[in-house]
Image (cartoon, rainbow, N blue to C red; front, side, top):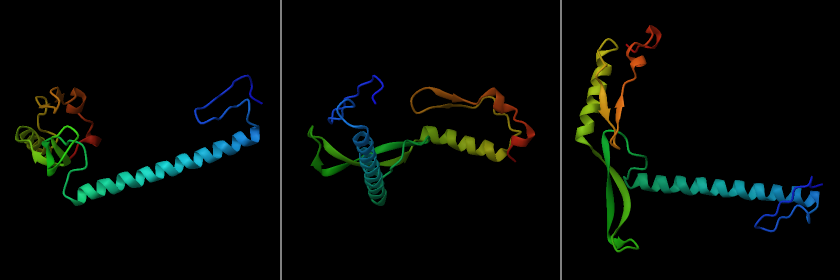
Length: 144
């Protein structure tokens, strides 16, 4: 029973020409195929990340205090004729590293330290500021 709604998909599935039994079976088969694809994709991504990590390349995003440095192949070229990118390495961003060191120092100094002026430039140009509500945490949340 179609309840007045007709569904036609690009792979030929049509609710008006297929029986209820065949539609249920097709949905089950499609679900298994989709699940298998996701499992294969997960394995491929993990293998690629493990391979890059094994070569000493960075496999994550850009952490604050570091900059990504492109590593290019000395022999291979990309489709535009430039050296092919084969990975990325992290390099300390000295300007941001000073802010990271200050954050760790303030943490080591304890919760009584004045943090009202703490402002850190973000990697994309805007700034991070400490929220006023965090300046006076309840005693249960203060880190000692």
